[in-house]
Structures are given as structure tokens and as C-alpha cells.
Length: 216
Figure 1 (cartoon, one colour):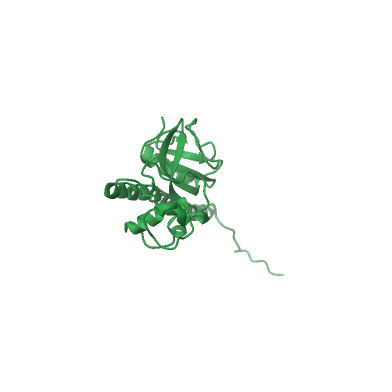
Figure 2 (tube, one colour; figure 1 turned 120 degrees about the horizontal axis):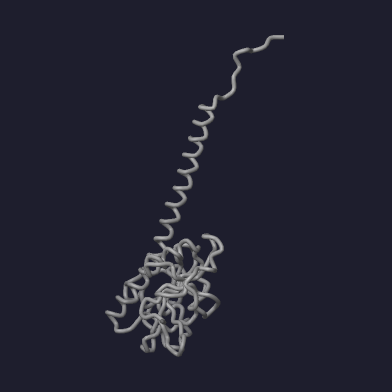
């Protein structure tokens, strides 16, 4: 039987080099994921600020907000937690439908934005999708007898919600400022400044952006 005397294992230097290479690869992968998440978070911020900008532009042109069909200063849609399927397409884009047509309040804002040529002529349910596949829309929220207009983003991960909060408010204060976490069908968290609902950065939450005026 022959023995191979020159057979050797890895030296400590070679093992160190391999570990360094593996570390660099893992670092690049994690950095790449961070870049992807940051890009997605910026799209969520664009969703919120873009819809707010369109609402203000519509106000400048027509003297009221899109979807404020009775011109009382409040968008005629009060649900803060709505599935995107609520925004079904109506027969054609138009300014506020009279009640007899049965057009859903959820559609009015989108049909008005289409009619004003501030949005493409797609179905409202498509326009109402945010960058994460949830919904984005204008709504109103009443507390203390006062109605507030908000942009709502539903079903977005916590890392994106926090990015929207910090970029608009300048700090992470989920229950304060202009950006607040939305809970339940019609409630917005007002009493805390912590993102306690975010057990992980991937936890899905709903956000309300008070773009017009905000509660104290």
C-alpha cells in the first residue's frame, strides 16, 4: 500500500482568506437587500406625497378636494382600513356623480382625478394600489368632533412605514405628527410615539398621513 506523503489540508491563512471572501459575499448580499428595501420605502413615500400633491393641485383648480362632493372641506370617504377591491371601476370618469347613480364614495376621488387629467384613465382599483400592492387613497378621520383629511397607505411593511414617518415628520413618532399608524377600521393611533405594532421590520401595517391639518 502506498501512502501519499504530500497530501495537505488548508493552512490557517487559506482558511482566513476563504472566510474573508464569504464575509464579503454575505455583506454584498445584505447591502443589496438594504438598497432594494430603501428603494421600496422611497416608493411608499412617493405614494403618500404624490397623492397629497394631486389633492392640493385639484384644490387649487376647483376649490375643493377630490372626492369632497358636498364641498364641506372633507373627503367623502371615512374608511381608513379598506381593501383595494373597494375601488371598483365606475362606468366612466366624471366629476362627482349624483347619489342616484350609486357610485361608491371610494371611486369619486379617483374619477375626479382622472377627469381633471391628474391621473391616467385606468380603473380606480388599479390607481388605488400602492407600491406594495396594498391600497392608497384619500379619506377623512374624525376625532373630537373635528374631521381631518388623510392619505391612507394600507398593507405596507414597517420599514417602509417608518421611512414615510421619518421623512415627513423628521422623527419616528407613530402616534404623533403628520404620519400615524392606523389601527382597526376607523381608528388612528394617537397616544403613543413608538412603533409598537412593528414586531419585525417586515410586519405589515396601515398608515394615515394628515396632509391637510392634523390633530394635536
